[in-house]
Length: 228
Image 1 (cartoon, rainbow, N blue to C red):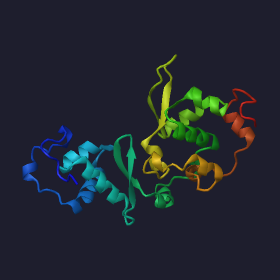
Image 2: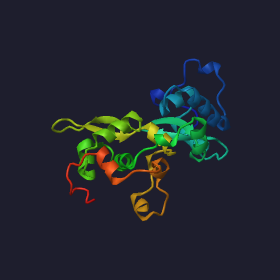
Image 3: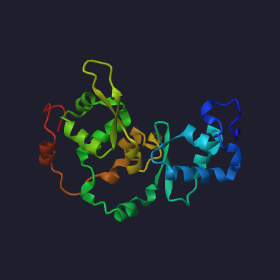
Image 4: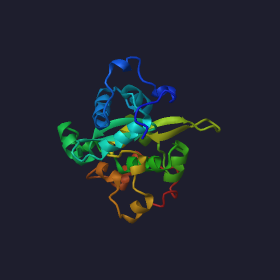
């Protein structure tokens, strides 16, 4: 493996100016070093920045990150989002984390919000008009809720009439639902057949959600569109 960055490597992999004063990190120490760097990073880190700080190649960083995620003794996981790296608490400890942070069940998402979030997750990037066409209801309120919860973000604008925003899921979405990347989303066929536990069920609201309450929350665009 190309362990250390070579002199003819890409500029972002070149060793820092004070590299000569730093000991070369041993291969077995690189996962721990990356853990330290991610813990102090104020925002998700670029792979190139991690490689530059460690004085190694990007392929070495990728291998070390996989080592971190494969360690069952750790209480967190590495999350990959749009070319960046972040660490978050392990999904298996989600209930303990919610209790520690005093997150009550009323903060959970409604069925309408989960349906919209699922559409965005599996079809992203997607516009509001595309979501409303599929769901048959006005989604402006739900989108505002998801955006306010930082579960979705605007990736850009569609180059068409009106230049509508295109929505995608965010890093917070991966963190909240215990995913290391979008590749961890259950295949749609499995969700339809109920052969895997739907990832969204952990945030489904308990208790009362009558059809009348749902209609009040989302005004219909077309009474026949949903077939309900």
